[in-house]
Image (cartoon, rainbow, N blue to C red):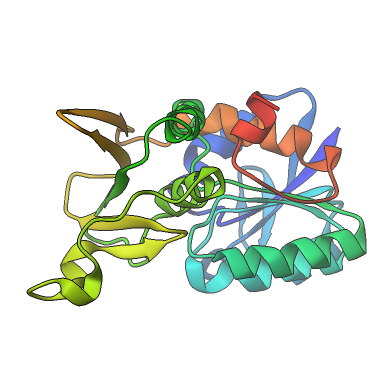
Length: 258
């Protein structure tokens, strides 16, 4: 039985994932983390204010973080320092953050599985895009999310850009210093890819990569619905497999395909 601490237990994602943890014969929620609900019991488990309190208050094998960009770094550090494996579903961390987390995790002998998106379909998109990038030299990424999402780009889009950057650098367009108009219109440079973040009502987190060639285009896009159900299977897989490897792994495609 794996004992799970869920940070962000009052959040939108928890409403789908935590019942699935409870329904699993090999997983148990032993403690939740949510400052606004500290002292309550949710999903049959006590809720405390911080990860540091959680790992001291209950048996924990894996800390799952679905919180906010401003909280995730501290939560992960506290979990690793306590010798707990970590599943990160919160966006807002950079490649430099992950390098530091990897070093900390290796020093403590624990595993960290971080995914910008726990949907199996999103993982397939990431793997398919990486395959396409071996043969197609020009692409840009469009990152769609709700009007209330403050971190840009989303973790899904950032993870995709970093994956493609490991394959090759895309061919350039007009250099930024040769543009007429605000350079921000060309999006952000993430690992060599131009990434454009759209924030509008009706979106959850949709990700699109457009490959362009002479006289043709290839568009790959993942569109989740309004519930968190698409992320359940991938999150449970991550919880079960995070201890298989010491250090950081990025994306559930590392579990599905490697």
